[in-house]
Amino acid sequence: MRRFAASLGSLVKDRRATADTVTAAPTPLQPIDLTDDARVAEVLDLAVRVGEVLLASGTSAIDTATQVKFIAATYGLAQCDVDVTYNSIVVSAHRGPLIPPASTMRIVHYRSMDFTRLAAADRLTRRIRLEAITPAQAHAALDAIVSAPHPYNRWIATLGWAGLAAAVAVLLGGGPLIIAVSFFTTVVIDRVNRVLNRFGLPYFFQQMMGGLIAAAPATALYMVQDQLGVTIRPSQIIAAGVVVLLSGLSLVGSVQDAITGAPITAAARFFEVVMMTGGIIAGVALSLRVASALGADLPVISNEAQPDLTQLPLKVIAGALASMFYALACYAERRALTAAGLGGAAGLLFFVLAQSLGIGPVISSAIAATVIGFAGGLMARRALTPPLVVAVAGITPLLPGLSLYRGLYAMLNNDVIIGLTALLAAFGIGCALAAGVTLGEWGARTLRRPPRMRRNTTLRRPRFGRRSVVMSNSGAGSVTPKVS
Image 1 (cartoon, rainbow, N blue to C red):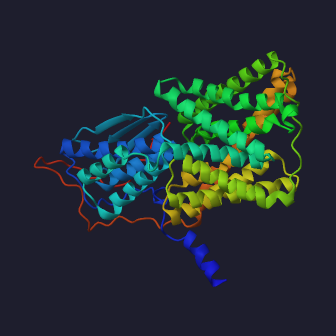
Image 2: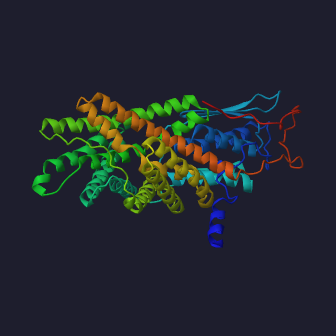
């Protein structure tokens, strides 16, 4: 019992991820000369480049702005306005009443699913504060992070996506044949989309191609199931592929931005999610129309059966594997894989238990996501990895792939009311997952909130050059980051 208590205590100990640190501007340990434009520009460039890595990885606008401001304050730029809007970061540093403010801007031109890079940027932020390294040293470390190759081969990532599809097929009740078909279908989807991405095809059409490929094998097997002597449920194969395609979208970040006070960024990210989901729907719909023209009408999708508690251990294991495979596909570090797996297992456990009590899928998803966010926030401290990694991986097995397909199928068969109901249910589940994760992460941060830092007046304050500048309130207070 003591060992269990010690293990539990180690999860909530004071080794915090950077996102859990205080948001107040720290007393600078190595302040720069605020009249030296080159030094100020060097610090601001470092801050926005770190913010670029965070924003590209799906971090919310408020967390990105907080870390950008934290880095700037570490070097003495305590009064900064930080504006994060969708794919741009603008920083303006106040240097006193007699010196013009210094500003910089960074545009994020890419989206990265490299969780190792995200974790490395998180550790660099911590190192800047704890070791008081110079801006030049921090720039060199950041250059190494950004230019470093993925931690393992891309084929490993492809196998991760395929393993995710296979685990989701298990969660949907698929047998060995369904699992195998889902696995190899996802391998084809990933490799084809990598080729299309190399040619610069817009992501919407890549999602459309993924939806088309996801539905094609299911239709083909359904047409020849009598000859093969097997029973095929095409919805399981298609739903597994849809979940894989949905997992790459920034749903969590968009809802977090809406909740935490960044409506413009939230609207932009959410519209992007809607458009990419529309690409998946278009691809699946095209495949189903072609199948119908060839005389292959897929069966009507029955309502989901009540959860069977005898299958609970299998579902929990499948949920853990799905989360681990997703983290693997996103190039997560080894220690993050275990945390992601535990988060996924906890989420599936609470989801199935909630449904067995008669709670609806939306509320059950919210409960499970809250547990995932809370557990992820605690485990992230132990694994020293950003909570976002555990949260996004943990909710992946709960994504509403089957509800989305059910709604699309009904719409294509002129059952408009049933189709809209299913699509709205999928929308509600997605929002519940993201909102639950946000609430859980907040709970984890509040549980062991670090003590507020007090300014130490004995430490060196920012230095000034030969020019005499009056800055009576240079260190008093800090400006709240502005996010849109």
